[in-house]
Amino acid sequence: MSRAAAQPTPLSLYFHIPFCDTVCFYCGCNKVVTKRREKAAPYLERVHKEIAMQAALFDDNRVVEQLHWGGGTPTFISHDEMRELMRVTREHFQLCDDDKGEYSIEIDPREVSEKTIALLRELGFNRMSFGVQDIDPIVQKAVNRIQPNDVTLAAVNSARKHGFKSLSVDLIYGLPFQSVDRFDKTLDWVIEEAAPDRLSVFNYAHLPEMFKPQRRINAEDLPPPEEKLNILHHAINKLTDAGYVYIGMDHFAKPNDELAVAQREGSLYRNFQGYSTHADCDLIAIGNTSIGKVGNTYSQNVKTLEEYYDLVDADKLPIYRGIELNANDVLRREVITQLICHFGLDMSKIDKQFNIKFKDYFKTELEELATMQNDGLVKIQDRRIEVQPAGHLLIRNVCMVFDDHLRQSKEQRFSKVI
Ligand SMILES: C[S@@+](CC[C@H](N)C(=O)[O-])C[C@H]1O[C@@H](n2cnc3c(N)ncnc32)[C@H](O)[C@@H]1O
Ligand code: SF4
Image (cartoon, rainbow, N blue to C red):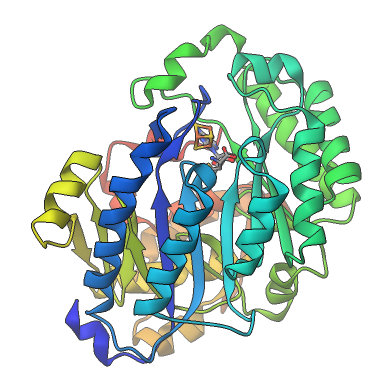
């Protein structure tokens, strides 16, 4: 880790706040569901300590260009706790004070007041994403997330009023009782009423063995695969007709949003936090379960609060696993990043950059892509691979061809598109 100190690249900080007041049955996030707000204090005490431990490994002059509070529900913590978390962060890291950083927070509209939004802006946040999922009362009931539209709208409007730059809304397709017609109403409402700068339309993967709350969702109530695909197609058509640009991997943005601009200009980047206009920052992840990336290494913190508290109390970094990429991984990461961000790839550039012969190195992968070419998903030219519009939707699958860890792993069901 200390090797990182020599690198001048900017930093990205991720803070995981795992608590939620109630559970949404579809949820696949790492969370602790509790009504007891006092549980946040002992957690944050360790987070403050981890901030100091992590900061000691990096040069003081590295500017934090990206900062993200995710969860769980970050606004579960009190206003004083929010102030203190940002104060401690500022004490140990160099934050941007000119509003040029990408400082974002995940908001559950049911868990936020105008006062909280004003405070978050004051603390330096300039982007928000709002969990909505679906506005249909029947769907909301089936997933245990009752969220009236006026509650969502109040949060969105006050974020605008307080000068948040880029607002995003999260939707999920594939939830119980969803159909093209029903989801159409959610899309109408989002486009006309919330009108966010960005939208994520996530695919619901039903894995009840893995995510306990999902056991409370009745599998028979889920839309069948064909209907799910129809919902996705409809969502893409409707959003693009409404002027949104498909960025890729479930994400849409208005044409003047900086993500869409970056995509047009070829400067889009993607990391754990999703698409970004900030190139390769080192990512320091703080809090239980969070995943960091420094240079060519990735590391993940322990999962449970107990383990997290024990390690931090023993003055140890709460990391339980890590990996250092080898040359093959770095090459494949670059290929996947190019495809995911630009829907295309210059093979001759990769040859020069990595001193390889792409067509020999990726012979098997190109054979697989040839099948996709027959289906009209990609076009393989002499020097370039171009993902065709029909393949944009399936960009995850195109990228999977270059993931040899996945190839070796039998657990491919995670990445199922439908
Ligand atoms: C970590 S949650 C945090 C947001 C906040 N707690 C809320 O619910 O509004 C971020 C987003 O992940 C998405 N998400 C959670 N579980 C999912 C699942 N099983 N499949 C697809 N998307 C999921 C939801 O769209 C949610 O808004
Ligand atoms: S979707 Fe958000 S509020 Fe619901 S359980 Fe997951 S993290 Fe908590």
